[in-house]
Image (cartoon, rainbow, N blue to C red):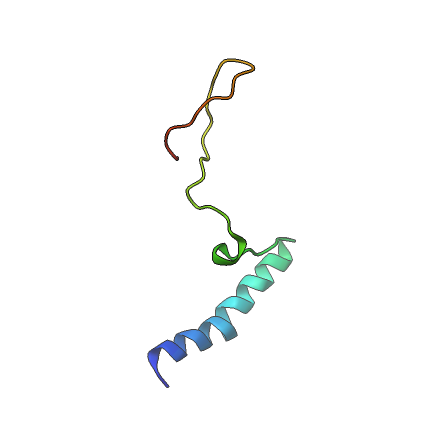
Length: 61
């Protein structure tokens, strides 16, 4: 068995079931970034601006 196949087997048979179990315990939903079209560079910080005007964030967090 190739090294890549061993890692795939470990993911499918060990690690992923552990993740599913933890998510179930925490009543969580699992999302895969490459499947969900979520942006990983989104701004997570807080900005301050004049009330009524949308502040412009020039850089990501």
